[in-house]
Structures are given as structure tokens and as C-alpha cells.
Image (cartoon, rainbow, N blue to C red; front, side):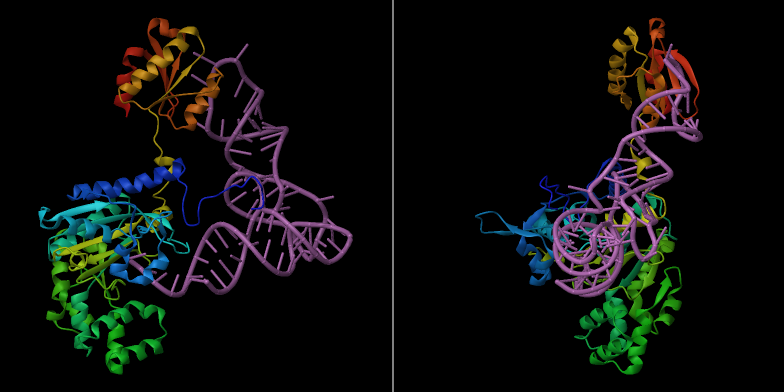
Length: 441
RNA sequence: GUGACCGUAGCUCAGCUGGUAGAGCACCGGGUUGUGGUCCCGGACGUCGCGGGUUCGAGCCCCGUCGGUCACCCCA
């Protein structure tokens, strides 16, 4: 912009939240918060920025390019805006050590910052809901965490036909890989290969599989296992057959299956053994939540990471959790008409208007104040005009439920209450106004 | 960091092989000096992202630049 007036816009990949956008964001956040609380999780938060080293511990120096990092003018320390919450969480848990009552059930919904090129479903600043359950092992804990995620999605109006939790398990996959001839040391690289299989040409996939010690036949089976997708409701026998393995290999999946079924989540979930999650620190169950047809990026991702707290200097303790960003979720909701922001803005219960008579002008502020003190959402017009039509138009514009018309009938203690949806109106006693409005809510 | 596409009114967009800009919505006013959300009539609205070049003439073609979108990389 060569213009001297220098109109500075918002930085790339950030969003301005005008009232309708903010209403949509709060709608999502309240579903997150209420689901968390109803499942027994407590809300926490940490600093917006941390020492840069907190992020390089887990992810290496390579991550620095993806961070917004800075030093204070004249300062020594390097900080970074948080790109994820997990390191902060691990730091907080490690700092309190054994004094925290177990299990730890925490959630938060902070802003995150990543220095990436923005694209569909990915911005440089976004909200991410994090839910973590620390100190409990086993399928019950994994499923509890998945339940929270599904509860929030359900409260936002989504159904199992809209989104699916795709689940796998690193221990089970490791067992399957070893059965195919992968050595113990080869399991890690095999996960990486599994994670990238869709981006590699078939020959390249085969070549790398061979590098892991897999025969052409085993490579073929590896590929089939990687593409295995089954409803969680399928029997264990079907699952065993699909992956050409034995029951002992997929014990972990069987216990997840039992638990998911008993809490009523089976139809929300499916097995997808191609899910490994990029991060090396996952140790057991891994899952991603996707739009059902796979149209968008993952809505959420998580799993079990039993050595994470230890990695940040705390005691070894079992842990699982997930993160869900607001960007992809909002796209999915909007696609399905579940995020009509205009309808999410607060609606006034009453819109007060005066016809300009002396008593009406004098009484309006008193009524407005008393309604508000009673917890009624009440507004007035700021227009100079006393044209009732114009004022009603104002009332309709903000989607008020009722218009309250004040005029000389106040001398008899009466006001006109007009139902703006139905168009009907009647004179009521001013003394009854507050009660009627509260009752109509 | 790499690549593709796109920048025209507040918003969504149209604009022919180059001839100095249009629609819908929104907004304001009127129809209605006390009855809105529908309807009818009228009005206002632009440095065509910015800078340069070609041309008698550029919204249109060329170069650059800034911004946006999407994909790759990466995805915690």
C-alpha cells in the first residue's frame, strides 16, 4: 500500500472477531467447556509464551522455523509464542510432581500460534481445546477422553454420519508389524512409513518397506493392514481376519472395542489402522477425528503418551489426551448449517421505545434499569426520532422478542407489549412487565 | 521455503477480440405526522489493490509489488 494514510491490516493468518464471528467462536467454546466440565475435567491455562527451549526438548531444533520466537529488546532469553499446549501441561505437572491429586483431569482452550503459511483449515493463530487425563492407564481412560470430544461434537449438532473418530493403537500395530517380519528397531521407521503411505508412490512405498526387511509379500500385507478401516461395531473375529493376525496381536483394540461399545460410542468410532499420528511420543491408543467423508483436515487428534511428563522432568505417569482446533471444526459446522452466526448473537428480551411524551421519556430509563437489574436483556433505541415505525424497525433489526411501547397510558400504569414474532400486542400493567418478560424467555 | 489461481461499490459478483463501470444484497429517503420484519418508488455509492510499461485509448495486455485463496513442505 503506497497510500500515505497507511491502513494496517491484521497479520497474515490471524482473524478479527466482529460480533457475529465472536458469537460463533463462543458457541464452539461453550460446547467445549460444558462437555469438559460435565465429564469432570477442570479448566486450566498457562502463559501465552514460553522459553523457546521448552519446545525444542520434545520436537528438536527443526521446530524453530514453525514458531513465532522473539527476544526482549536488550534481553538474553529467547521466547516463543506457544504452538501447542502439551509442553506447558507437562511442565505444570512436572513442577508440582507428586503433590497433585491423581488422577489429573484438566482441559484448556488457549490461543496457539504457528508460523505456517495459512491455508484451508490452518491459520497462524487459532483456538485449540486440549483435554488431558493423567495418572490412569488402560482403555477406560482412553475412552473417557474420546467421550469428552464426542460429547462436545454432539452438543454442537454433529452426528456420527458427520464425523468419525478414527482409532488405532501403536502397541497392536507394532505387534502386527513384527508378525510381518519387521524387527524391533524397525517398528519406529515403519510407523513413519505408515504415516506417509498416502503421499508416496507405490514403488517408493515398496522400496522403503523392503528397506525395513519386508518381503514383497509382507509389503503387500503391510499395505493392506495400513488401509484397514472397519466399524468399531465389527466383531473381534472380523478384525483379526481383516488384519490377518491373531487375537493376541490386537488385545488392545479388543478392550477399546468393549469399552467404546459399553459407553455407547461404537457408532461414532471406526478402526483405521493407517492412523499413527506423526509424533513419536504416542505410546498406545492413537486417534483422529475427521469429517466423515474425509473432506477436511483432522478436526482433532490425540492418544496415549505415557512417557511425556517424564520427558519434561517429572515422574513417569500414564497420560492421554487430545487437541481440537477451532478452524477445521468451524468449517465442518458451517458446511452443515450448524454455525449460523447471526442466530447465535444474543437476542434482547425487550426493546423499549417511547412515543416522545413527557411521561414516556421520563419513565423509559427507569424501566430499562429495573428490567436489567432483574436479569432481563433490555435495549433502547439511540435514534432521535419518535416515529414508532422507525423504532420498531430498530427493535426488529436486533431480533428483540418484544417491543415495549411507552406513552401517555403510563398515567394509568399501562404499557403496550408487542410480540415481534407474532405481531400481536396488548396493554399490560407496567408492574407486570418484568414478570411477563421473564416468563416468556 | 515452492507452485497455481484470484484482487472491480460496505458485501457477493458481472464487465465481450482493449473504447474512460454495472447488478443483487445492504444502506438512506419516500409510499405510512403511532406499528417493524414482506412489497413498491427514489437516492447515494468506486483512485477497478498499488506502482510502472505498451497503446490514440487499459478494469481488460505486459512487468513488478502488496494482499487473499488453495496445494506442496510441515502438521505438535
